[in-house]
Image 1 (spheres, helix red, strand yellow):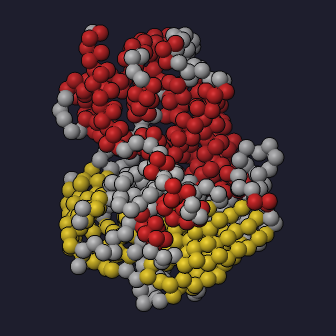
Image 2: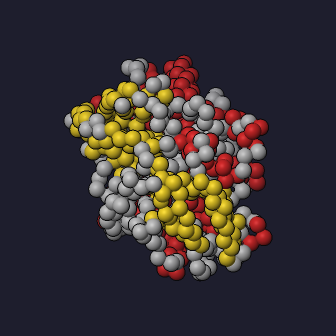
Image 3: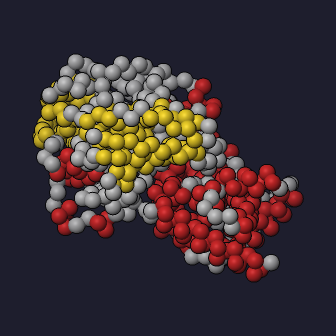
Amino acid sequence: MQANKERIEGAYADILSEDQDTNLSAIVAVLDRDLTTAYVTDPPPQVTAAIERLVDQRRREVKHLPPRRLRGMGLRRRLGMVAAVGLVVLVMGAAYGIIPIVDRAFFIDAGTQQILNGGLATRLNLSETQNGYTVTLQRAYADANRVVIGYIIHGPNGRSLTDTEKASLRDSLRDGSGNVLPPLGGGDFASGGAALDNFDASGVPSSTKNLALDFTIPQPTALAPGGPGISPPVTGSPFSFHFTVPFQGGRLATPDQTVTAGGTTVTLERVVISPSEARMYLQGLGGTGIYPDLTVAGWDSAKVSLPGWQPTEAGGILWSVWMTPGGTTVADFPAALMDKHGEWTLSIKAGPATADGRKVIGGPWVFHFVVP
Amino acid sequence: MANISALPIQHAYFADGDEATLIRAARDEPEAFGELCTRYAPRLYGYFRARTNSDEDAADLTQQVFVKAMAAFPRYRDRGAPFGAWLFRIARNLLTDAHRRSRVTVSWDSLPEALHWHSDDDVEASVVQREAHDRVRALLGGLTEHERELILLRFVAGLTLREIAAIVGKSEAGIHRQIKQTLRTMQERYHAGE
């Protein structure tokens, strides 16, 4: 009985942690028991078989794909946890409607919107067409934390890409010396074939004034007739672009602050603030489910309605977390924080994901530090 | 430039690896994607069982989620919604499409009692399941569609409030309030019926 009570309190901590309402705990226990009994069960063999078929199909398809240039490299990306805004179409004003579609993609987070509005994103207008597919690089930007590239891609006769074609796109970025800039995700959040991709620029020397870049996108893979998302690839030369953009430096703070909570010690080593985001480097965090929150001078990363930010139709990014190959946890807050000085507060909650997907929240580790 | 060393993908990750590692590996390794599907299959299947009229429909829709997810997965970004929320968004869209086609009819109030439990040899389990289902019907029957959905996503799908918020496009705090209020309503009804 006690064990079950503790299990319920742990599994539903997000509902029950605030108050000790025994009645609420009781109804949660009833629902947990009855809904699980009534509905949750192993799926029938046909589902398992379908998964196996998909894996087999994909395995055959992968054999025919060109080797992924970034395969196995770079970042052990952690859960890119996002407080997605969701249905924010309502905030799209009339002005939004006249913004070019690739520029709308910059609205995916407050940081990229800031660099767009501030005129920091270099207009490229580089276009290349192969086998009917056209890729147009419209804008690019680079600072001490990330490189951002906005482009549009269309299929033959200007049609939009299918999901499978989009799925086959794995772009890569190298600097002028051939060093790979690891991808940090992005998305085709705007309509009209526009995409915005991010790459880690932490390895670029801070003394850099102008950054030469080689951006490569493979040719999309066409959808085979009758193939539900599985198709043989169309091979061909990748789209390749070479260009140079100004490199914006960042501000560095080194709190090197250690906090222990629940027996786990976490260190906030350094903070890099650039025009596109503020980045925190942490040691000691493990497992999935890292939930950071940054507050500074009235600004709170948890707030959807950041001043001056209009999220895209699909939502927006408030923060993301990933891990370097060396085990450093990185928390990115994509917002305009270059002019924020004084005391900053970073709060981290964490907890390993359990087998059933429910999480036990640990921490918080709270860091107060001053950014000059 | 920082020295980014190669991280060969190891299949050992798949047995007990965390979800983020699996997601990273799944971009290149079909087996990792299969492992993700396997992990989520019971929750998706349970969710569909609660939202459809037959186990066959639930199994069919579960498979469709994975087919669509595999096609779209390479464009899934870590900076997007949490993976679980992303999968359940696909699930909800499929359910909506199924409703439009009237292939799957879902009306909680008219949910047939004869459905969802198996007529196999395990009579005792079947009885327990039927009794649980009766209690669930009584508890959830008076809720709005939105309230039922929140309860099912939390208790059957096992999603966190943050994931549910990402799926339905509300704030986490708002979802927290709504679920708590719904639970209090159910609690009163439960005690009144005792």
